[in-house]
Image (tube, rainbow over all chains, first blue to last red; front, side):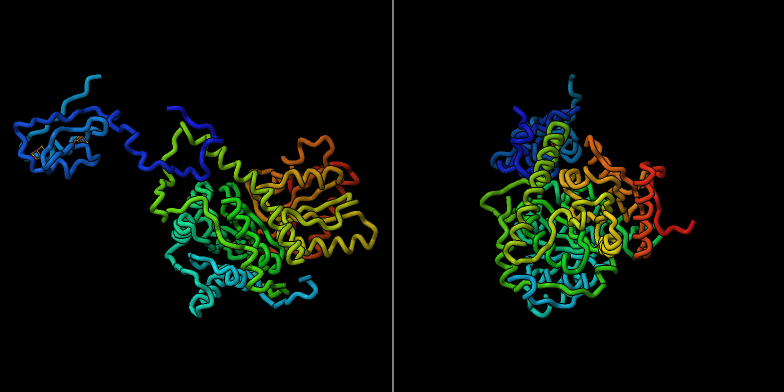
Length: 93
Length: 396
Ligand code: SF4
Ligand code: SF4
């Protein structure tokens, strides 16, 4: 992304093309990755409710995977899942 | 209408400020009371209760909240005024920077009062000098009449520059001193200030925006330079707004500085706020004896009008700078330090003596002002400065 010069910035630092947060891929921070096992999942959606980054992808009431662009690897989903359907794996660097 | 034919009333500085606010009829006022400026909002709240203004008056639980409410209201596009003093201003400190960096017009009226400690309720400039680098415009007034007119101008300046603006008066000396105030008609004020045209509005749901977003090493430097540009441009706005005001209403309210007998002066005292009146009195006396002395009253501290100070002081022999605040830099008060820095690039510049006076409301009388001129005359004779700074009125 080309950064703006000081003259190109809007006064007061107003950001107009909202929302801009999707442009910021917070998944970069992750040191552990959640692995989702579809066969163990009962689609109770507890993980979806708890995920602080809305990274649990749900379609028609069913968990279809994890959005690794935004998942920060906090492990909450793995912790709250009553079926042990999510496990955390060390990122390989 | 010329000033001679204009209606005048007897008002204290606080009353004059509240009256200006009434005529301005701001959308939102949020404030917390603090001596010596409490009366401003007290009187104004009566106007609100009596239905004389349409203002949404928000009494808050602290000054930190007062300024935060002002920011929210201003970001929504409202015209906003608040008032405070001393510790109250200090409590607002962290939020002051946010108001200016978000380029939000807010008018804040300050009754200058010494900062604790030790605890004191009387006048000095330590409170607002402590926030002079917050990115706000700062205008220091000499008397109640100037306070009234400056507040009206401040609304325009603040909104055209998109910068918050403080209007100062000396605590008790001006806040509680009854003076002659020439007032405008309500209609004149209304037509002069017009309607606010905000840069943006938080409440505009058709055009959603993000404000105050995280700005790290990749943008903070550019952001600050951009903010500085707004302050640089504010100089012309300050000049033009006051000029228009003087032309329209025939009221001689100065913009950046007030010159008093400085054209041919060899000795000039640079001073702010109410103490300028004392110096003018002494200048009259000394001029009668044929001495070439004058006073340059600095009204605007931010943005610092160094160009004007250079022009006005380059040919003066000795300058005395009066600071009603200490910096603990061990080289004098804030004004003297900045003035010397402003004059330094000149090839021809005066000797500049720094003075500290009137801290915590210590009386500053005719004899004290006379003593300042005596010291400056002596410096002129010896052509040399021997003391980095001099405390006036100090028991030794
Ligand atoms: S909490 Fe576990 S079982 Fe429930 S939807 Fe999420 S992964 Fe499936
Ligand atoms: S690890 Fe944390 S951020 Fe990632 S999907 Fe699970 S709860 Fe969400």
